[in-house]
Image (cartoon, rainbow, N blue to C red; front, top):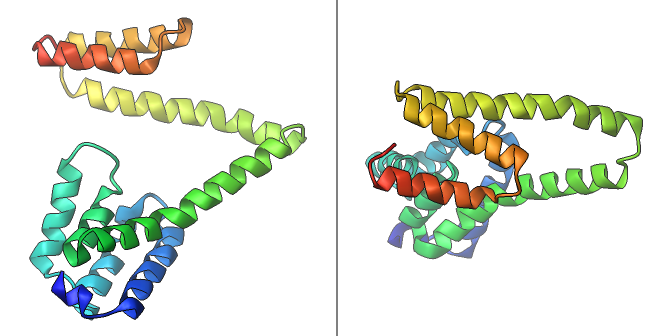
Length: 180
């Protein structure tokens, strides 16, 4: 933390600005630009050691939650809560803003034929990716219970008005009881 504090406001803004740019390059997630984060934080500014950088990524990847958490852990290692805020806001702000702007643009033009075609084409792709993710997460168990639980949850969400969070909670209880 002291290495980053000695850089001053210019360093904070530089780090924030660099992560803003990395956000626009991170097609496929923030982990795809980790080599440049390493170059900046370890090699160029010496904010972290090589071991701290690797440990930060390993810790964040092992924790539950979104994969982008490793960016906050890197920032925290480098500069405490302010470092975590600078890196996480930097990596999230551009992509979130672009997603919000695209959603607003599409909603304002939902009657356009091209927008309707895009949405219609993306729906099966999104569904297929979700099914593939569910399959990968459950098929590795090589047991019938996780597969049955996944199928039951999918049917319940599709055919009823039961909120998905209730089903996630039920799955957690079944897991805690050792049934799944």
